[in-house]
Image 1 (cartoon, rainbow, N blue to C red):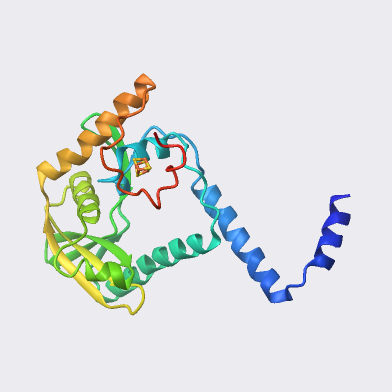
Image 2: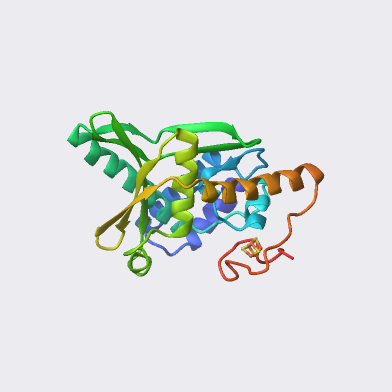
Length: 231
Ligand code: SF4
């Protein structure tokens, strides 16, 4: 029966065969992304959440964020991921790549944090630095010419704490023209505390079954996918 309906629908479809093929390919890649990153409740924090809205983090870790069904958004994310493969290859060619995507999952000040650095490279013999790589559009690139974005630094800083680094680099590539900009950064304990204290607060509210107080200013009133139900 289902096959019959599919046959009728396909006859009504006036798209060319290649549009159908692309749709199928994008649909499959979305399905694989969903399997890799299911929208489910978790009891740990991702390092990439450093500096994000506390409510957004709480919704995410409780599997409450609405699914993003936009295939173009998925392609954008995939593109960002492939930048990491490319830079991994570049660093490998220099012979100074120590490790790509060093992972960690550890209890930090009482809460479980999971993440990955991007690259560890050798500066000189015995001195290693941790690199955080971000791909950014031309408009955003203008905002990172003098300093890294706060959230990007906070993520690097949290990974640096977890992986025991004092020095590193936040590296940007402009996704529109492959221009590059990098900033040397150092570990800051106060900034780490700011991030981990947010995680500790969320953890307490999760355990009590209560909502963490909504920030006075919503940082993403237009784009946050929780804006429809966040009160
Ligand atoms: S709508 Fe605003 S306050 Fe609510 S989770 Fe999103 S960013 Fe945070």
